[in-house]
Length: 124
Image 1 (tube, helix red, strand yellow):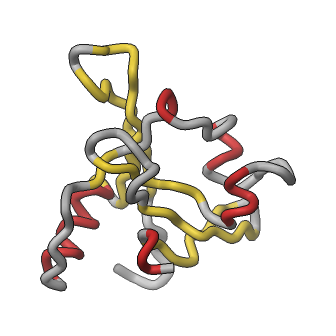
Image 2: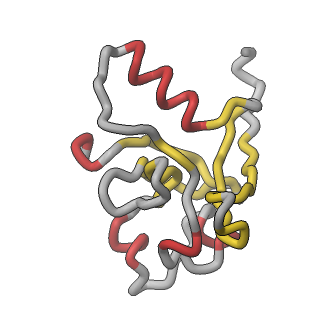
């Protein structure tokens, strides 16, 4: 990819569990590849042995606030994510973010949210 090219980040919204169709998961993809797949490939290439896989975040399972602000890092002063200085971008495949989320530390510049780094709780 030419350095002038930008990665394209899109979000898919799909039913998290077919038994409960009103519960949706929001999953990012980068250049058409779902982020859980990219993370899995990254971990396998480095011989990591994760206990499970990643999945999209499930807004019904956690209070992210308005998602249009959440993914841009626009939080109220007392917001959990403002204090964390990060955003959960993937949860576990079970739909929870509490045990092992993939988070992104972001900066906002030129009206774009740039991801500075990603990691799991043990990476911090």
